[in-house]
Image 1 (cartoon, rainbow, N blue to C red):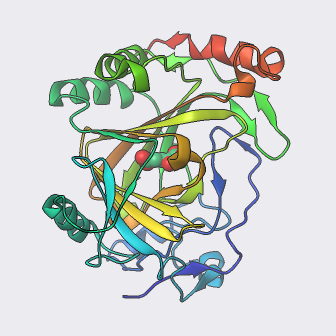
Image 2: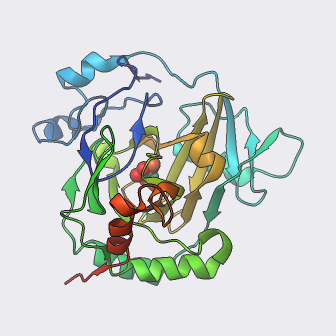
Length: 323
Ligand SMILES: O=C(O)CCC(=O)C(=O)O
Ligand SMILES: [Fe+2]
């Protein structure tokens, strides 16, 4: 299998963005060309810097960045077991394994003598939404215009624009969360009031991934200045794999996220690990409904509450009616 890594060390400039992410070097991506790639190349995509999708895969910019290497090749590989609530070591997978192999190993896991690690702060809720609830939410999501984003994704942003480098926030286009946010937040509270209750996001970003576009999201950590502990991601239409890497312990963990599941990444998973979605783990169309809560400094009593937090929290509590 051919691997790609990025020659610029993964650093990239990002100014006013609607959302998160401190991007660093992405994990190797399998490079499979598809018949439709060439047709897509004539279109305009949103990729810049280290990012790529099917449309720009063979552009001059992307070709210059590629070198043959897999950054995580020597990491110990684990798969997350939602039954055991632990990540179990496997030698059947490597750092570029495909979706079907990861699914097989995950489904065949059993409590045994394999080395395993606690995944503090990782919570996977299978069947978080029923099929009917998913259909209702999707209808509302698809009423809103999609905007081309990076790495083959499209997005719908409900949140502030943030200049991560200069630590500035603009709220000009932020009118509140879409009306279906209340249903989602109430369902989270009803499932686990302790861990998922009391969640008042001031950002919701729906991300659309498509297999044909080779959509993915590079290994990254969400920004820690503005966004708080719990990152939420709900899998609509199709599930996928969340890849987690811990560079200090040199461990990689695959978390199989079924269709209609919710993933919460908090505590050490949020702060000690990176996460990403590999394009070759995407099937068909997938929508990730993601949410972020205020960092402590932006909450009442925090240093940035008066300057930014108060207004952001007020807007986060407003609802936008969808026609
Ligand atoms: O696609 C997902 O589930 C996660 C996306 C993500 O990590 C992000 O938006 O920061
Ligand atoms: Fe993220």
